[in-house]
Length: 422
Ligand code: AMP
Ligand code: GLY
Image (cartoon, rainbow, N blue to C red; front, side):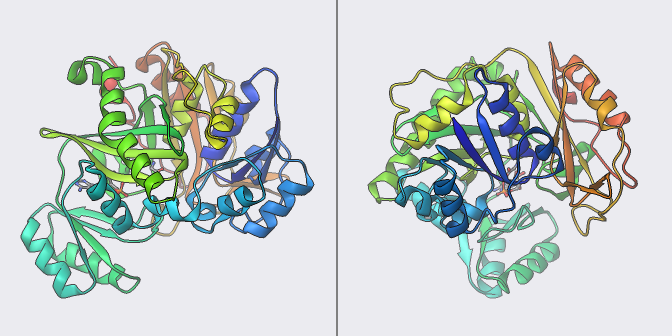
């Protein structure tokens, strides 16, 4: 199959790695990709968020499936443009992508569909925001309403900091003040064809910059899958997944279908397991990064068939995807000063040695080749991914590989998956 993958991060690299692992291999191209992706497949310099450019390229090149990685092309209507021209695309149209792009829209859908989530109030002025903060009390949760690249959320016990955050984001639109939810976080991905859903295996993301869940929120500093502790809480992973499908994913997908904005693509359920039950903290309309890097290496069922079936309304007849029992861990290597003002353009070395560690692959995120040298070009530079027989093994491999990589000033968390290792 001829597949175009849109995006340039470690998530897209992990999707491409999974597609290339299949037998027979596919004819994969990426736009715009990065230096790591370009080693594996041809890359084309398209703007992935330009519906016209993407559609013309897909038409002219006989693309049979477009997989949209990041949210920006979805919000820009790239999937709508492709679907109008009859090209199968894995990714929702602009209207359904508002599930991620607008927290107010997501809250409305959840309300109507009866999906369990925290109480929230939308504030358009500082007076409204302050009143809502005082109503819910500490810890305070303040969220920018639109896309904010992971920087829009502040969770704090400091009332003044909460008010500052609301003041800043109110310049860009409205903010949401939410009830604080306490419990373990789980990311569960569901493939959706607009009507039926199929689950992937759950993962846990580490959103804070520093060890011990300290420091600012980031796009994600590491992840692991599966989540062995779900067995103790729910009896099995499957029982947990079944509950999320029944109470969250299907009601959401049905509500979007009823509103004539079917959700075709990846429904990312960001969940908190509170003492009162499972609650949605956020939906995303695409694969998560870095969770994808730990979910796809464990996927045994061919990914391409699943993505195509979702894109063409055919998930209903398929069995649930099968996952290996391997433990998978990913640790993100980030630039100095990430997430505030990452310092980039620095040389990266040691990747060949790192990827020679058994069970290790490297998913590039922000890399480029300049004068024959591999350099960093953004905040999250790469994800080291390791599979093993258990988490102790997978972690040892990931950290052995990281120790072989050099990037001046770089940072990574040392406690990814420590809680599940023996
Ligand atoms: P979001 O971008 O909405 O996923 O939020 C980023 C992170 O902030 C989440 O992964 C949680 O760790 C935290 N968070 C968001 N909303 C809440 C909430 N209502 N209660 C507690 N923590 C939250
Ligand atoms: N890992 C969080 C996200 O992809 O939004």
